Length: 395
Image (cartoon, rainbow, N blue to C red; front, side, top):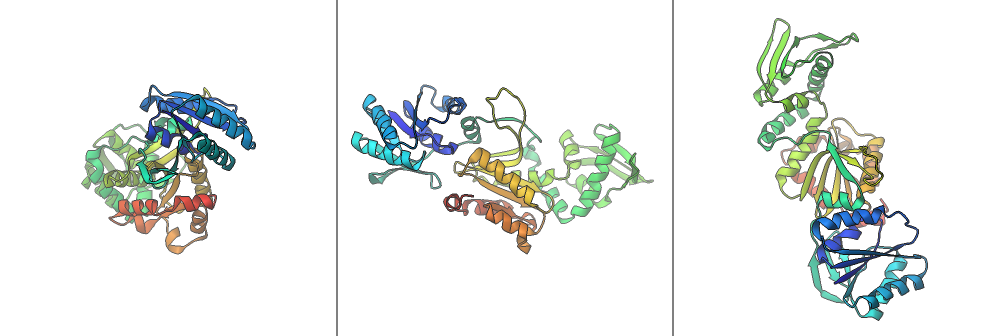
């Protein structure tokens, strides 16, 4: 079978039907103004994993010339006697000319409802086909991007309960968590102590600033299995980290919210892919091995990538702008963005929250993260957002 596709700037339109229909050959009709072959190199990489024997051809057209689009599409239909066409991608003129060529060539033509995860025959309303569920790696490969590392290792599943318990404790007392984390960071910046910590209860940094931990916070860390042998006497603090990652957790202020969102999404079991602290090289074909943006949490919801930014503080307009650019760069129109914050912007309906709504960014705030059903709240917020309506609003 030969599948005719109209190349689109939205990655999902270029790969979803191909990976679902599984043709022997894929022919892309594309804008002749696209001169960089890296886009098709990326698609080949994606298909190689799933359809190693597929043949990929590409045919440039003048996208403002209906006759050119029609003629070259019809030529493909006549060249290969086993063609089907998928009409989701490309410009409006490409769809019009392609449809006309398909009618004249008497071939089956499909349309993909990406949001619903269905492929439909445009001439047979009774025919539907469920699309495959794309992974994050599928998206990255097809986009020409790649994961180049992670800012933090994903926590071991055996530690999920203790991490979530500590998250809820921290979220209820952010001020004392700030004091304690600042103290541990200050000590860590001037002395190397491995997993065995020992320092004055009041620590004076070389810049003159004083730091002091909250005893109750340290006791909570011991109770939840992050440290042992805690001693707070004679103006000294000493303890032992139970494992290396515990030290990272206790000296990284905002990591707890990232882990909370990650574990909640994983445990819910309704998302096909969940990744923590992803470092992305946005252009894997520029021969520069440089990390681009860090994304706190990425999940896949029914083949739609969802980019989540975690802020253990209130949110700002630059936070919204950054997330909007990130999600559009990788996911295009068919992607979603979520900001999870310890602030109360949604509760108070602040101007920043209204800005997020304007940009189609979902906000979950202090009330949500303090709830025991955060995973379900996250899932509902994502699945109830109408991605098609956002597309028509051009956000």
